[in-house]
Amino acid sequence: MDKKAKKVAVLACSGIGKTLGALARETTYELVERVRPGTAVTTCLALLVAGDPEAKRLVFDNPVIAIDGCAKECSKKSIESQGRKVAKAYQTIDFIKKHKGLKPEGISELNEAGQRLAALAADDIAEVVDELAAKEDK
Amino acid sequence: MNTKVPYVGVVSCSGEELPEGTTSRVACRKVLEDLRPGKSVTICLPLFIAGDEEERKFATAYPTVTIDGCEKRCAAKATEKLSGKPAKCLVVSEILKEKGLPRPTKVRRLGQEDKAAAQVVAEEIARAIDEVLEKAE
Image (cartoon, rainbow over all chains, first blue to last red; front, top):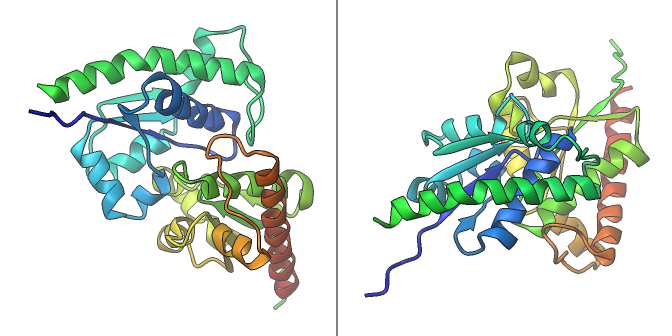
């Protein structure tokens, strides 16, 4: 029997006022496009907040990871405002602390250090994506 | 009474799933940084949900222009629901259609053609800001 592949929904805050938000967005794209394509999927956070049925289905049918820029945790809180608990929440500021040599800059486009940092963050988060997808498979 | 409004708040959907969401985000930053610095401010859309009263009062403190990627108009709807009625609501897909420009194709980083489209959208946002400020004076 063909088993339907399990997904893990990854939602970034995409904060437009800070580099930290851009880093959350870029980390999400790294996961979805490079690190775990097909398993990690994303949707517009604003669409979920607006109550779109498809966006709600995605987060209720799959485990959800929130990637926020800062301690305000806008992504996590937005998801939880829809009645869905997140399986795991990250703040990109923690990845900056972990990789002190990389200083991300830019909002519309991250600088090279920011892009490298996003790639490293996505590599870290990939393990959790795998765990969550495996749990869902059982 | 004539109250001078110093700023217009620009709220972008920043939709992660569509190239138009990225266009809205890039255009919004262009307005803040290049086209109307000192006349525009922004707030992260999800902060309306996560923030406290201060953030929720954003649209009462500033007239707002929302910029959405698609016809779902998440930024406009969320701003109205959580903060206050926007002064103007713009939609990237509609602006591009009006101008005869193609849909952007890249969701993560805009290509050269997409950047040119973002510039056009930014100019529309700047025009909307000017109109709102003019009306408020």
